[in-house]
Every structure is written in structure tokens, then in C-alpha cells.
Image (tube, rainbow, N blue to C red; front, side, top):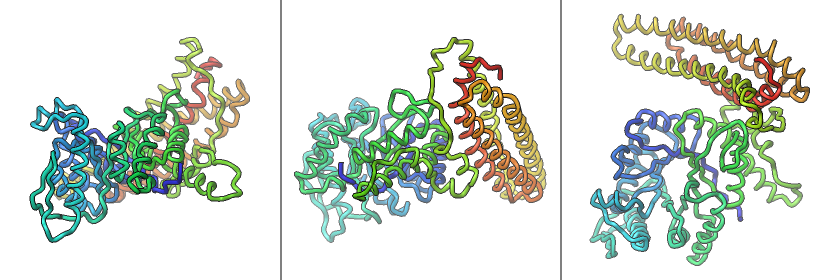
Length: 507
């Protein structure tokens, strides 16, 4: 596969569930804040439990500043292309050039017909999409005369072009079958398969069809963006399936797709904030670094072989540069031991090892409650500032003290837990299995790092009590604690649950 040269993008695929509208907006804003590149929203207008995709995209454009937005993909039979051209160009103008356009020929025809849309055969659906592409591009091309098109599915009788998007909106086609893949190669700016319908092992054959069609049309296949909608599970040990394991496994698999098939946009179906952050802050930087190094190596005649993901994972992106604590807990430098099968142990021993997870789950729940309380206090601060009443000011002062007490209590709990591990569990593990010594030493070092973060949080809490306007400092420290602690807990579980169970240790 040739070097397609596209910049790698990583994004979030958010389900437009009407009941979860607050979560969707929050996660889009989070994606913008943590450095993801794009947010995709599926388009199924016949689903009564879904928000309208274009309305939602417009709202997200107003709440974000940098992240790109696209319908993933538009249900064309229910979106007339002439109107869609105006809508997409308008949103591109209002968002500062942040819109791309995923297009689908249609599916779930019963639902489409129930909404008054056409029921098309597969061949007609492809033909209609080709006509729609012509409509879209014609209405985005400046000209003095009206556009005329006499198609079987769409007609224009003198429609004036405009408004004009400030950047060339990419037309990315959701395609799996040969005719759609060939249409993508001939006319599309991008190709959008999903891992649920096109497994990684099927991408090569599909990509060859796209490339061949592009070459027959006199196009460079490298110009076509390869956008992959993906889903997976972050877990302690690598599973047998695609994207099932720790971040390093994800990074390795996505790097292979980028280098082997030219995939350059990875859009993760996600509904959990933590998974979104792991994807953005651990997986994405590792893939970018690995791909950049391998492509640089290919350009050097004296190169000695491909880069490994362990090297690439040392680059954690801007958060690691801004927060030394995150850099110290770098995944790439953590000692790892060969994994044994926990399921092979008797249930009683398995349960003994899982006690560590239960203890950590308590710490994670408490941390989530602190984050929620912090956001409630922040929202209350805004209300108090708007109302400017003595009662609201007094209420907020009480909220600050309550938040401070909550955080201080959690810090004491966490410090006690780490002390017990340092003085009891870690020495017992190192004595029972000497190969665990490097892991134990690293965990002890990470305890020191976390202790430093707790000290910073305590100082931020004191500053907040003295000056309520410094609440944001507490928020920053809680975010840092979340990143560092949750990474530490995952690492500890990945390395110690099985030995604790196998050695039948009492923790």
C-alpha cells in the first residue's frame, strides 16, 4: 500500500439518543477539549427515539470550537440533495469550515417508506446517489446562471448556486458492495466503512475495488480519504477480537490499518467519557507516532526495520507535555509480565484476585462522585453570579466547603489504600514471586506521583476556599488526578489480579 499521506484523524461516533441529549453535547465538547479531530452522528430520521441529525450537528457546532463534524452517514432518500447542499454549506460557514458530508444510498427501506420517502432497489439507490453528488457539487460551484439537471431521481430547473462553503466539503461515501465501492473510486472524496459490516480482514479487497475504479477514472487513489467507524472494548488483557484489550493493543491494530490499507480517520462508537479520553490521550498519540516513524523509515534507505508500538506509545500528545504526572505514568515504560489465564484457576481463587478490582471500583465510584459534585458546584457558581443575591452567595460558600471536605476525605482514603499496598500487599507479592519485583517497584513509584498530585489538589482546595474564583484550579487538579489514578488502577489490575489469585494471597 502506498503512503496515502493523509493526516491521521481520530474521532467519536455519538448516538443521537434523544433521552441522552445532555450526554451527547457533553461528550462532543469533551472531544473538542481533549484533542479529537472529528465527531460523527448517524442519520436515521425514521427513528422516533433519535434527535434530528442536522439539528444536533448545528447545536454541536455552536458548542465546540475546533472539532470537525459530519453526518455518519446521511440518509439520502430522506434528505433532498439540493436542500442538503444548502444545509451543509450553511453549517460549514457557521462553524468556520468544520463540516464534512458522509453520504449513504439508503437502508431500512420500510422506515424510509413510512416517512414518505422512496423505496428504491439497490441499483436505483446507487444511481440516485450518483445524481445527488452531481447536485451537491453543482450548487457549491459559483456561477452566474442557474443549474439545470434532468435526472431520473433528482431535477434542478435553474437553481442558483450558493451559499458556498468556506472549505471544500468532503463527500465521504458509506460503501460495501462493488457498485458503491466503484462509485466511491470514481466520484467520492472519502470512503466510510464500519467495522461491524466490514471487518479489518475485508478492507483490503474492498479498497482494491475503490483504487481500481479511481485509476480508471484518471484519479489518484491516494486522494480518497479512508474513514473507519470502529467499536471495541478497553480491557486488561488482549482478547481474540478486534480492539479488545489495553490501549497498546488498540494502537498496534489501528497502526496496521493505517499502514496496510491507508485508513486515516478512525471514528470510535462510544458512550463513556473515560473510554473517549483513553482513545484520545493514549491510543491516538501512539498510532500517530508509530505511523510517522514507519513512514519516515520507509523513506530512509538505511532503515533497519519497523517501529514497534511500545516506542510509539511514549508519545502521549499535549496532555503529557502539560502535566508531568501523566508523562511519569507513561504506558510504554511500565514493566509487563507474561499473562496467564485467570479463568483456569478455581473460582475461589479467582474471587480472591477480583477483590482488588472491587476495592478499585470503590475508588473509581467515589472519584466519579467528586467530578459530578464539582460540576454541580461550578453550575451553581454561574447561577449565583447571575442572581447576585446574598442567599445564593451563602449557599455557594457552603458548597465550596462541602466540596473541599469531600475531596479531602477522598484523598485520605486513597492515601490509606496506597499505604496498605506499600507496606503489606506489595512486599508480600514480591516475596512470593520474584519476577513481580519490577512491577511492584513501578507501582510504588506511581504512588509517589499520585501523592504529589494529591498535594497539588489540597493546595488548590485551600486556594478555592480563600478565593471562590479559583474553582477552575480545583477542576484542573481533579482532572489530572482522574487521568493519573485511573491509568494507575488499570495497570495494577492488569499485572496483579492474576498473581494474587494464583498465589492465593490474602489482600
